[in-house]
Length: 170
Image 1 (cartoon, rainbow, N blue to C red):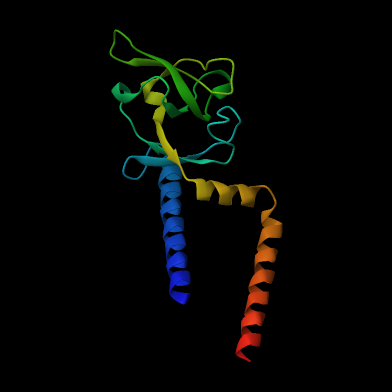
Image 2 (image 1 turned 30 degrees about the horizontal axis):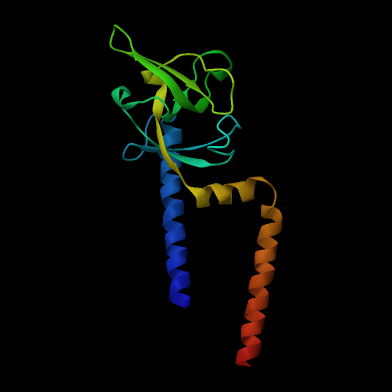
């Protein structure tokens, strides 16, 4: 049992280290760089419900414009209107190659009625390739206030388990 506990602690520590590395690289590069072409973003609005919920942690892979397809979920930096300087995760609804070789991309949140302003390929951080459910769950617990109740309950349960073990041994 002790070996399993140690393995779990090591795995959790490694996950935390990797997530911190991603965060440091992304923050210091203003989201321009990732690790191995991978970036991590957190959903902060309801625009993609039911696909992603607020607080979901998304794994995003850098992608060349030629690989972007309609129905891909992409993350990009907004440059126009109310989206200016915001990081947006929306679904591609159309993509067209212009005469100059650049791409015109139109996106929309799945829960939104209106399409986003046109974006260029230079605004795209990458394509969503998945999300980390356990990290999303932990972040939701921490950010919604239940964390303040959850930790003391775990501490009490742990103390009671130790008391029971001591009683069995003694």
